[in-house]
Length: 169
Image (cartoon, rainbow, N blue to C red; front, top):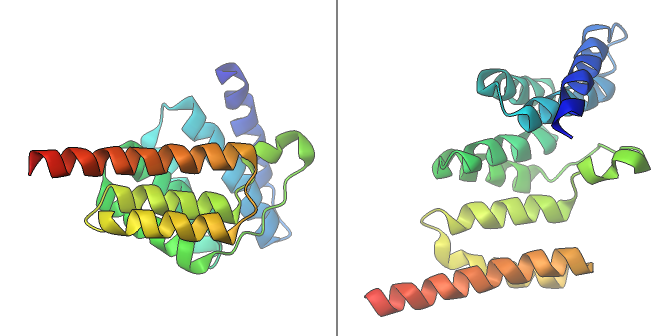
């Protein structure tokens, strides 16, 4: 529920504030959860983008912040920026976060990174690379039913769009 995100944001913000031991991974994870809470509240774009950028400053080799920055820009139809951060996430492909089972849905996986990159390809001039990359994803992972459905939805969307473009031209 949306009402649960404000208290969780405060909790993780306090955890970030009291990280006196300089445990970078724990601080990064707390910042991620705080950022997710801000994003789900949907009220403060400036705080959200600032937090994702601070996470990049904290550890440039981890992919979570790049994926979230890509999603931030993709949701705001700023496709070039979304593609840039998706490409960085894809190239780094380093996820250290391992959250407990109760909040496992917040964990990012390599599949999530690949799908974010795929969606960004779809919205940029590299559109023609979508179908070959989707085939690469199919062979790269042992997909569960939800992942198969997500990938099939994407492939169908690309094929329908190609038919439309061919008909118009």
